[in-house]
Image (cartoon, rainbow, N blue to C red; front, side, top):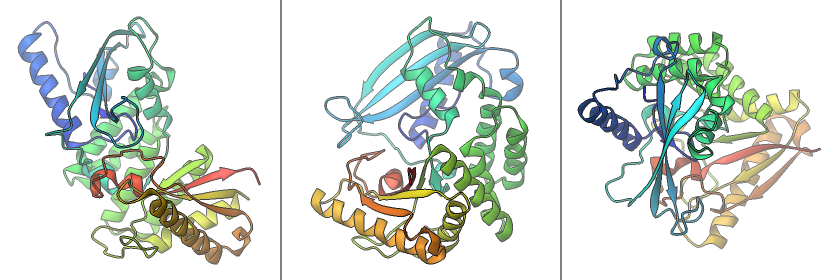
Length: 332
């Protein structure tokens, strides 16, 4: 099986990772007939097959994931579920020309991001092992749920929302199914179906999960060079509801927060730092307005483009996470 390839920083699937997976499947069927390539599904996972995983990560000229990304590092690992070992590894680098890093619909539409243990385990199995090492426990313990999530993402991208919701619900009931991708999916489907109460409840689950992980990045879209939200409903979300929910959940948990603004690398860095701070202060003021008890329990910070997750500088849907606002739980 091929567990869908992902970006090694964000965990997102893109047009390029999907097309690469399809090309790998075709190549294996043509050149390696001794292997029977099967769909990534819970039923096939139960048979303990070999699983190919891969990360596709933007790097700079020093091959580090910081600054402007000028190449892509491609990592592959072949994991034997029956033996619990990584049996083969591969590494290559690619030029950025012809690469389409546009996220698939699910990842493009998802309102929030955090480090999900299931994705962390996938990345560590691919990037942090050598042949003969054990498969990372975070990955192998969640692989059945991950197969259901992969099917749900495909259904969502195809507009089959009811089917996707059933798959997310099944994943949530599965051991290891308590995944951020599941909560994102449940939120998105209820939003698409116009179920307001269910949407708000689902966003609350996202916030609770992120606060538990002590890190929650939310994709607030601002007007260029401004602290005002972009209010086009075609590209933005229900920001007042998001802010109200974050404030309520943080207040209920007596949490103290650091609100940090981020920008892409476009423009002078001193300006980026100033703009990111102003946006963080604006979000802080909205939280305090929604829940006055947070006034003295929230601080604002601006990082500019120092902590880009994507770093391609395109300022479009491909690097939306670089223009995020993060909420980190800090010591009061």
